[in-house]
Each structure stands twice: as structure tokens, then as C-alpha cells.
Image (cartoon, rainbow, N blue to C red):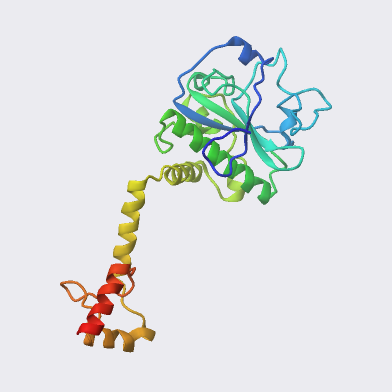
Length: 265
């Protein structure tokens, strides 16, 4: 596993160096991300990724994609490790040309496959969906991509309608079963990127906005008597509009001033 700056994405790297795509040694400038799903009822990463690294488990059928003569390849797979946990395995350098959609998007889009189960397990779907959101956000940040821009983050089915991918239906046969669409996915990716891109300046902006909301809120009923006394005795004065800002934070200097007024009149 290597560091991505994301809290929960379980990203590993095992390049498929025997795959024909890797050996072709062709490179792209990524302009988007294409989401695929495998179309086979096998959620185990070892079906596609090998050899076993101690986490994947052994593929007894020896039919993973890390072998000569396999012409198809994506940049990553999302699925299950041997211990049943969800992970992502990067299988090509992100800017190496894969063969994942049978058309022009091979030369423009980074791609990954989500390993399908029987398409009925909500827990598995939620876990791989979340992993896919984080992976896509990570890639968009890496290449300066806007996930909400047309044609940037798409699934294979959308690529086919755009004329840049072969006629496949993934992932539109799976996501709607759990009330998700690619529009939802793009929004989730954008929100993930916004969360990760929090800066100190943004934090200060949000904090000031939050404090303004607090200042505009009235005092609670349970404190009415105490608040009336505090105003009558000059403990608090409020702003120029008479707003005592009862729900806002109290600083030490404000407390000191309140005590000073209380004792000195």
C-alpha cells in the first residue's frame, strides 16, 4: 500500500508487466476517467491481478491478466482481497495507454474496473462504490480534471453514446440497482475533491460564515432571565444594532470585559 493523501482508499500497486498493453509501452495525456465493471460474477481481485503478493490470494486457474497474449488492460481494479476487504490495485502507470474500451478513449482516459459480484449485495456495492469515488477523485486531482465537465468522468456505456467507446452497458446495469447513477457518482467525486482540498483560508471563510450564522440566532428560552439581567446590568452590550449575539463564541477578552463591567458598573 502506498500513500495517496486519502483516509480510506486502500490503494496498492502491482503492474501487469507481462500484459501486452504494458509491453507496448505507449503513453497518453489523461483527459478523463472511465469507469468499468467486469461483467462477471467474481468479486476477487486475484481473478485479474497477479501474481499473489500475500494479500491477493492465489489464482488457481492461472487466468489473471498478467500474461503475454492478453491484449486488454485497465489501469486499476477494485475488488476483494483474500481476507474479504475491498482494495484498489493499480495495474498500469496512470499515463500508460490501456486497452479498455475498444475506441478513442483508450488514448484519452484513465480506466478502472470494479469487480462484479452477483449485483445484489448492498454492502459490497457501497464499499466498492466508495472506493471508486475516492480513486476517481485522486486521479482528477492528479491530472487537474473537473469531474463535472462533460466527458471527463464517464462510464463505458456513456463512452459508447459519445462515440469514443465500444457498445457496452457497464456500469448502468449495476449502479441503478442501488439508486445510484453516473450523475450521482460525478457529484460524489466532486464533493470528495472539495473535502480533500480544504485549505486554511477556506477553513477561516467557513468558520466566519458559521459564526455569522450563530450571531443571527436568538437566545434560548431557558436563558431569558439571565440574559435580561446581563443586559440590564451592562454585562453585555451587543453590537450597534443591539444584537447581543447570544449564540456566538465567547473569547477570553470578552469574558474579561463582561466581568469588568459587572464589577465596575
